[in-house]
Image 1 (tube, one colour):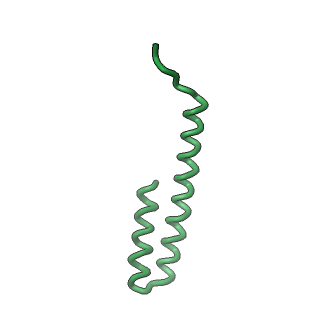
Image 2 (image 1 turned 90 degrees about the horizontal axis):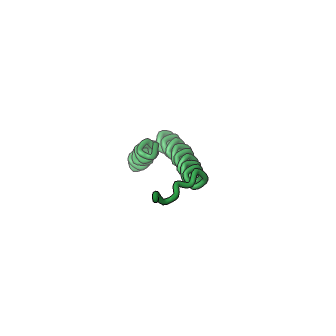
Image 3 (image 1 turned 90 degrees about the vertical axis):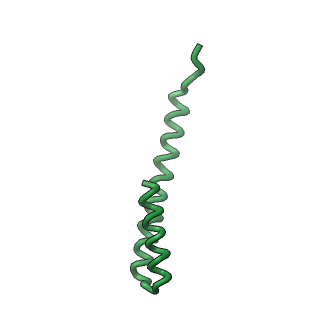
Amino acid sequence: MLGWAITFFIVAIVAALFGFGGIASGAAGIAKILFFIFLVLFVIALVSNAVRGRGPKL
């Protein structure tokens, strides 16, 4: 998912360089949404792993 966010970010940068404002803002919006979804899923994974608590093996 982070890969898709980076892809849309690059598309937004290239579109902005060529002057396609609508495409650039759309791609940037999609990249922002995907990045925040990735961030939320990452935090959920960290918290669930901490709650599960894998202790040292004896």
